[in-house]
Image (cartoon, rainbow, N blue to C red; front, side, top):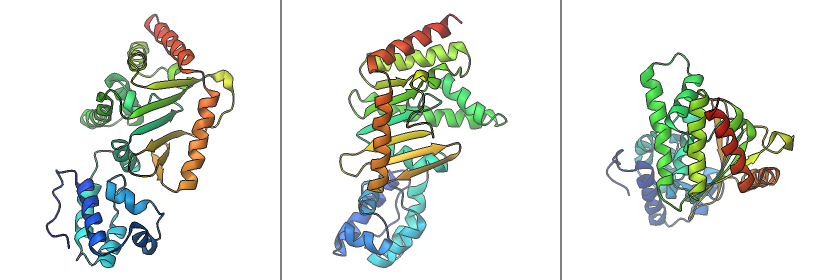
Length: 275
């Protein structure tokens, strides 16, 4: 049985997942056998054990009862749930950090992983016009920290589809937009990311309902995340994820090629520079 409480400073979610695997195997149960009494999908326990999903208190209590772990998981799931991101996005952001491939559809804004500091600040201020400056500073710092994923030259694969509104909506003024698009262009030209643009001329398309993020993992099933203003939901149900994956395929089919998209982004950046 697990003993001491987890150290919140030492990747508590991954540690809790490792302890879950140890406790489950000690109890002689497979992941599927633990899935069944919790009434969760067949991949959920595996995602908890790999650290890609957050363990909520109600599940923790049931796991303690099933595995006879004397309240260990209930005591420690609070530390594993702590996040510097908004509640609706926390699980997606933490899964994103473990993904081997990320596919983003952005309907209105440059994706957070690609934002510059000035662009991120303008976005955060627009959402919270009366917030103290230190609140905005923290939001911007946390958003920019996510971009550390891109310091690895090859992984994760990042493929983004922008609606044309992303490059035409002037966020923060012409200078901020020019710099933000130049940052995206630099990542494209260094072969670090793939970007496609869906032009206004494409008309109706499969992504008009909002943001979509697909995340693939080497050792866990794919996840899908959808978001509206202040709300987000992470899906692991295979049928639901497959439906969102099809939507993403339809978006890439409606978009310009990567080469044509780069030309459109570069043209927009020049327009902002000369504004």
